[in-house]
Picture 1 (cartoon, one colour):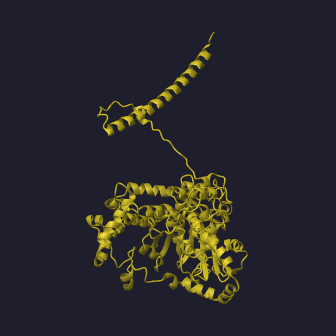
Picture 2: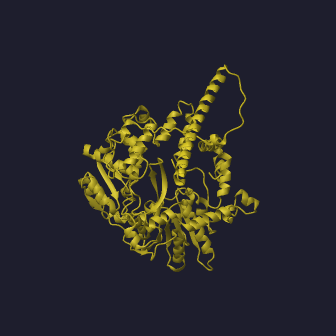
Picture 3: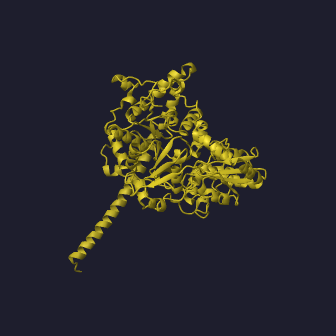
Length: 633
């Protein structure tokens, strides 16, 4: 047979591929045989039948680099895909259009923020003088400790304020504020009509815009989480005759679960009253969920708020916010400024850049820049409520949308973004993600400018973006977070089929199945999806299921006290404080407590040192400064 060059090449190539496959199979078989021989030799040596032999020091690097991993994807029978646990099959998108300018900007982040981060990395050892005073490095450099009789900006404090400036519990800011007094008058005007509606109806939805007084003037006693725990003890909440669900429009996870529970309670108890307060956008939805219950409207703010949109989309929201603050401060009438940012890092970057740029402006009037976020120490948070003749610029997270009321705010700057917790079912974890705010959130932010007088809201996005790229309302937390604890709670309440539970917005199928799989792995659910004895014990703790299992398992290992400390410290915000521009010093202080084997053991070490130092209560204030201030705790 005559073979042409092309055919000869193809036959040779195919032969080479076959030889490579054969060699690959031979190599795998050889590696398997070597592993088996090594195991047999080890067993013989352990039993004493065989003496020690020489070790071959000539290694095959190719064989050493090869790792064989066998993965068993085991699932319980109740998660075989034949059963649906929710009517929401697909995942719920947290943005209206992933290709829109706002969504792209949220993913890209702020370029100015990255520049500030890099600059601070390059100059970690450069400290501002007011942060060095009183520290060890400040003592070395000859910088005096700060005067306790002046505030952060060097202004002299009045004698009473100088003595009690660190005690934020002496003043009830809401009760003493101008806004609170104004709202008392508002709600008193409709008091009789409101009480009559509550008497005549079992369920009432109270509707009010920002500033209506529905939060400050109605009585509340406990959080949603506490009431959920009460429902485990009393399914019909027999101890309670009425429940007020405040800020229902925020759609927190526990709030949505309580809605489903309370809907059943009001059906079984005719003597039970439920009062729901909400902003205007969700009022009709809540009324419909509870069967078309009446709505009662409280008059909102009476001060006009002008909304100003950007002419073109902002490429960098941090830079645009800084420029807008400077424009207002240098050319607008008096009034404090509230800036909405997404989190601690961009808040600190905004404050840093703003202070730096204002310092370059000759003859600029003073501006008090105050950050506001959850990890900020309480005494620093309280500074936003202090009266001052100097214009204040408060840079805050969305905590200032509904939870805080500050007198004197006349200007609001809305960057258009926030951080929300989003569950990724592929990795089984929650993560904070920057997303565009909803139209509802944007209106809440604008309302902050009209609490005690006419105001202006500057939106750093266009009107087209507001209408076309923002969702009407934020995706409820129940549709975007891990539901492990909620599934365990519902199972404990006797909800065998999750489809039968009254969700206002049902969670996605993937979220529920992944949560149930986690519970099965932890031993809280059996192969049929029913609650096990371990699951019944786990739900008695108000913890995430892994932490609850960790605490219960510690009993058999005789380390309950230590694990209890670790679980407690994991259930609260980080005890370590990293102030801006002092990250390196803070990290160095943290190393004193560092345990190489585990971050959890590091937390345990911190608590143990605190426990030793605080053993003598008469020395508490001395040791508080020694352990807390000097070690950034």
